[in-house]
Figure (tube, rainbow, N blue to C red):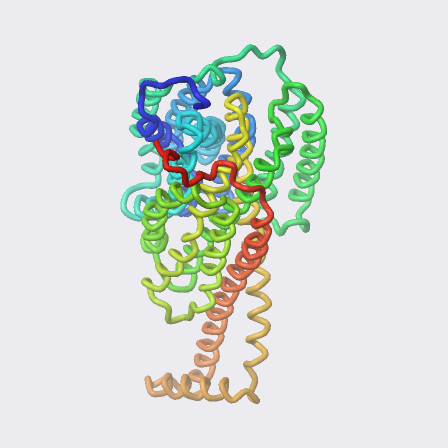
Length: 521
């Protein structure tokens, strides 16, 4: 029995229509990262000030994500989705024509508000468009949006900023958004459970607490490393607001009959545990996608376009694997696929241990493919299991919570890994410096070789010795940085290995097919 009202339009066409808009929004969460220096230079702002272009978007996006299910009920899901598409399109255009940093930040804030509803609503529409036995393939389609867009974002952003203008990062959303809005208007049909519902009264207290807690948390995560975490009164203030706001929000929402975020869905074991796994899908996907471009740009001299091209071949591999996993999830227990995905990703993270100062482009591409190989095995089974016991009435709320968990995982992952990177670099540097002594034969040999080389160029011996020591110290910093990236990736790998074991204790996959002759139709 299908959960949705009959729709004369094939689910595949509905999926393409709604995925176009969601892909555009997910792309925007990563595409602007590589353009910050260009934006700062163009608008006469410092690099610290320009980071608010990212923070403002993430804060607004994080607030709206969990509320999108409630807003869908308030407006009707299709109406809400079209409103989000058109709002995102308009604010993208306004971001592109901004002539000052405050103007750009203001419209990025509004862009985050309108974009926040696109991911979860897309997932809910696709979920209700497919019959239960084909949910795996449905989430293979949403996975293309969720997993592929962050991988391609830096590549596309780097190419646009290197060859055109950062403004085209925003302008390109306009034709895509208008096309997506038209297709959704024509193709999408709300089932009865997703149509506009009468809301007796608006829970302003719950709404305010969610906005306050998540907004403050996002500021802490995005600005923490830059402000030196708890050594900054700015971070301490927002951390306190986040903790108090979120605790009060959970307490308040749990007591409400019609909450703006339905936390009672976590009572369903097949929903709660996959939500935790989706948190770590975001953790692994976003943190690893940030690290590798940083590594190749700071230590290997890659420009924005080339560093993006390190990531993009992995996107093609993910695209090819998605449909396969969509079929596998109907015949293999989801928890086993999730465990396999965690292990595959962990192997990819551990592969960074083989990176040396001589590593070439093709090796980086191979390492990135290994890092993303397990993502389809995580996203599709976790989504399928999470929705296996969700009623059509709760589809939008469930999608909102899952999207929030994934995005929070990404934000927390990026913050933790960036912090780990800084501390590891200090530790590795202090360890390597211990070997720069006259008693160390390797140091003496390197110093002698460099000094002779520089002297042969006609440099006086006294200057040659000082230049040689400077060269050795630069190499030390280079190696310490590479080792720090290795430590950061190994930190992610350790978490993934623990989760691979934990996944085996998840509930069984209730959608598993029996091998009866008439099982398929």
